[in-house]
Length: 236
Length: 195
Image (cartoon, rainbow over all chains, first blue to last red):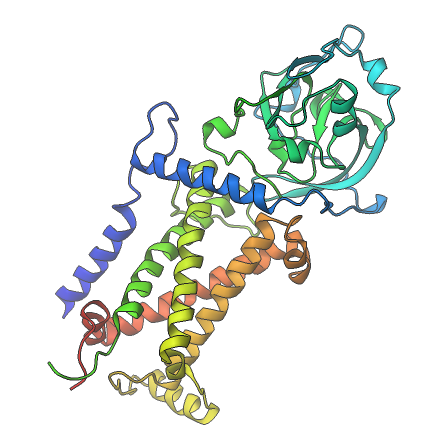
């Protein structure tokens, strides 16, 4: 009896370790079988999330007294390494399927109609903070520069080497903004100065900071974290 | 070998597929928990060595858990299997609970005693809460009604955690009972026959 029980325990232990051993999903260049399976499931989850996305469903908004203070910094580096962009020489470069690719100065972005929102920022790690951002609605900006909004993706390149991309329906969502201000003040370097994406219908890492280039494309651009194995769509 | 099957094959199949799904969901869920713990502890054993892998496992295995669970529910309703889980009478429950705690509960093949019924219905409920609160955490904007049902994003995380805890307690008791009455294990694999 004891023998049988210990066999059972051993079988259970094997059941845990055998199918999962070595599946670290850590080396995107050399995927093993489990990595390929996880990648296919993640692509399937991208499609499910795109189908689930309703352009009229708004992310919840909050009252000013619910804002998280002090704000929480998060990046793939420590706060003192945040890039400092010279606002006088800053230009937002445009690329891809956009008619007018003239770079934008910060002062030009500031005179466009601005939107303000107090929304929840949910990190892929599980925590959430509430903040207030204001800036230019991305859909207004895309129309103004003559972007082909039939394209699939809007991609972003950042001053810190970070890069990200979102689907066009999410880019055209009314709460998706090119934020210039945070908590009533111009963005500071740790929080994405001078321009960051604020998209409350997606997880925090889909809100790239210190954007220096915006492009519209049909070629999947990936992203800093998505290329390492995080789900690309990562919608909320 | 002419009697009725103790565990019909759809029950056995969904049971073992559920074992795989539950192990992956709980193991990867522990790694996800560790990235931002709700309490003053982290889990030492997890699946997926880092957050990205754990989320990938979690959001892949959720399909197995949910589809397999739906197949079980549909089969259970269509075949009448669910009738074995009901009714749970308080008097029978007290009697069987007392017997179980004094290790005197007779195992009757093919019949669920009141303690078993309560445990099975309880874990099905916990699994339902786990799935719904999990969806509320995954999609607090698009599935806002689920998020609201559980009291918002932050509370949903706690509900999800306690649903997992309930399922883990069930697994513990379930395995303990199998260890105490090992003859119940082979029929869950072969189907077994009633004499």
